[in-house]
Amino acid sequence: MFVPFLGQILHAFYSTLLRQQKCYWAIVWGQIEQVGLNAVPIVMLLNFLVGIVLTHQGINTLKDYGQLDKIPHVVAPIYVRYVGALITSLLVAGRSGSAFTSEIGSMILNQEIDAISVIGVNPIGMIVIPRIIATAIMLPLLVILAIVAGLLGSIFFANYLIDYSPITFLSTVQELIDLQTVFLTMLKSFLFGIIIGLIGCYRGFCVYSSAQVLGSMTTQSVVECIFWTIVCDGGISTYYAFLDL
Image (cartoon, rainbow, N blue to C red; front, side, top):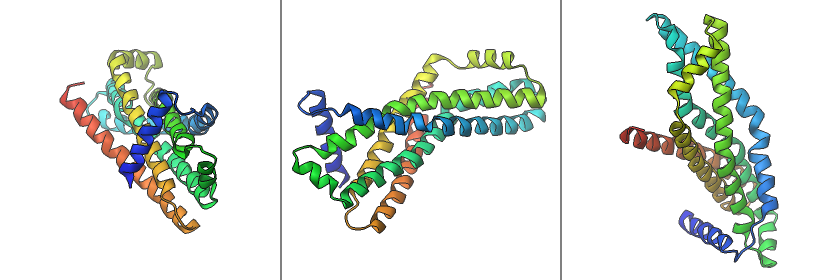
């Protein structure tokens, strides 16, 4: 079932690029607002708190070795490379992946998809493509905000707990993190966005009979989005390590 669905998406995307099919930019902008802008407060708050937790654990560990001045070396690379992107992707998977499934499933139950097809509009191009585009665009931007919030939480807590200078912390982070690392993290987040959009929309189209199936598919969508995001993150991290990136 998934392979034909993926083929329809690729065909619709190709047709859109060749302008053989209309690109519904109004829907894209609406999904950008829903997936990205509306998620900014919860993404930044959650990552700020996670930054505090990581800093607390790092301080407890480094204190035993008398290396408290190394706290940026512990928190910053981990957060920029892995934690920020993963936490944000899981949040978007639970928030937007489930929303895609429930929205599309409800449209199927209400026969809206059939109505769209009857008037000669491709449902994949109108419903699926804008959601995938919006998720792929906004997730890397959300990850950048997440990294900023996480590092701010770390700076705040390190200054509060061990009186670590924010200026020193920022200068150390600047030395540790280069543009290549940030670019690779954004590239990984872009792929996560495509995965979440694909699975969320696919499970929506798997709804066929009742509200009970809709609930089941919504749950399955969240689980699969989280599972494949973590699997993909592990694979990409291993590949980066192999290339010494």
